[in-house]
Image (cartoon, rainbow, N blue to C red; front, side):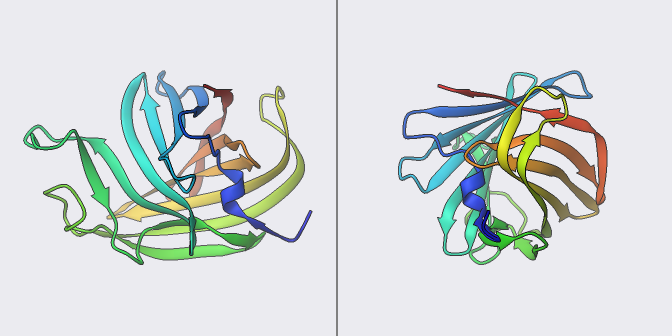
Length: 205
């Protein structure tokens, strides 16, 4: 394998009108967790809808091919009770301060970037809060067997991310298989792994 890689190649890229689902099963809280990927229509911006216990929780808007790599430009959430003029509440980021995930990288790289929520791009009312995201490219495996011993993948990246807003830092240690995405994860809190790995069941529709 080449020393460098493009991180966008390790995220699902469903065609327009298709979905790609990563179902992580039941978590420690007894509720199912899954992520559903879809194509916004331009083969560049993809949408990730997260479901927790069968309820829609949020949607990430991610540009896979920004000049700075894979970039999360906005997050959508259930609207507040008073936000009658929208279907979903948008939290968007200032240009230059979006959530970075990585571009052309090598193992050992670290991305450490300030995040800034945009008051003007977000649904009223969002405070113009600042945060930080740290992404570390930990390892790369030519062949990888998931923690449950049931699935094998080729060309898998081990990556950690820790995102901080206020006094809370959370993230995960993820294993990304080329073309399949986040096939296994372990949650992180305050820079430490928490709990057991969760293995995804992959499906296409």
